[in-house]
Amino acid sequence: MAHAAAALSLTDAECAALPSVEEEIRAFIDGETNGEPLLHALYDYVLDEPIPARLLETLLR
Image (cartoon, rainbow, N blue to C red):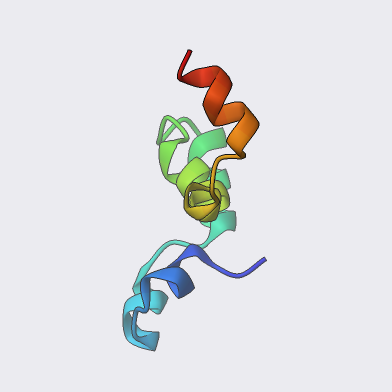
């Protein structure tokens, strides 16, 4: 899976400064974070996907 930074159009230096997914997992397991950065790293790309019409219709009822 591509790193979430690729979607942000960051430079190589900026990408290198970001924690890796592995580092985010370790920080979560060690109790250093609440897991929010990890979830963003893994799933932010989904936020750009359109909501299917039938689901949107159901949610708007």
